[in-house]
Image (cartoon, rainbow, N blue to C red; front, side, top):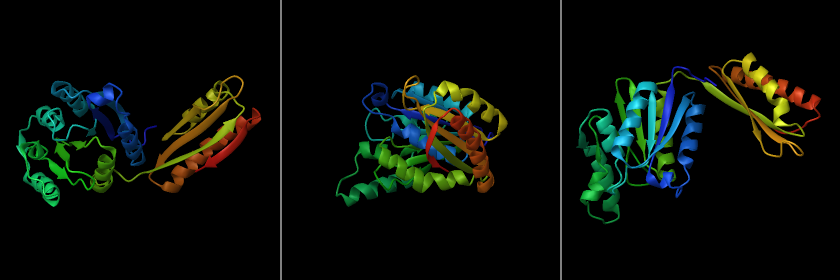
Length: 269
């Protein structure tokens, strides 16, 4: 679905722990959903190790093809936290001690009667011109950098910290740079109809409606016990129009599924 063809986003997940399977990458799916409902097309989700040159390579590619790049991970005090160093290198900017970020960090540690160390100070180094994003759930600030009309937002890898910064500091900034749009999700469950039987119907619906994405999600066994979740995302400047598009599309699928003796349940919109 092209909810807003002019706005594209890449999500760059950084960390060896993701690549070796120690950590499940829930951050990427969470961010992707938030961006989708803001009306932005997520066109890439990429995971890279804690290696500066590889992070830089993906950032440089992203700056060619996306309007917004959101990185997660690599903002902490340890030797392998290299994200902002990579952002600085990719944007050809100096990595500098950000006084606002340093103040945020020092206040956190002073409340715990802990001294500032070079490791803690490290979290305040950001690309020149970056805006530090307040982290209400942790210590490492996020970073917001705009360059040549493109935006790089760097968030911590800890989910509760990432989500807090995104909700409190990022959403309003994004809303200011994108046209207002409403994205509606609707769906239902159908039992007794194989996915392959509904596939041509979904294709017809996809061609009939613009600004719509329709997908079937198998939950049962294709032959013998088929169960499908049918989900639609529809977008429009007007919320009611978006809902009308979604409902019209699902009505066609529902009618055809019932003709195939499917049992419909769990409808929502």
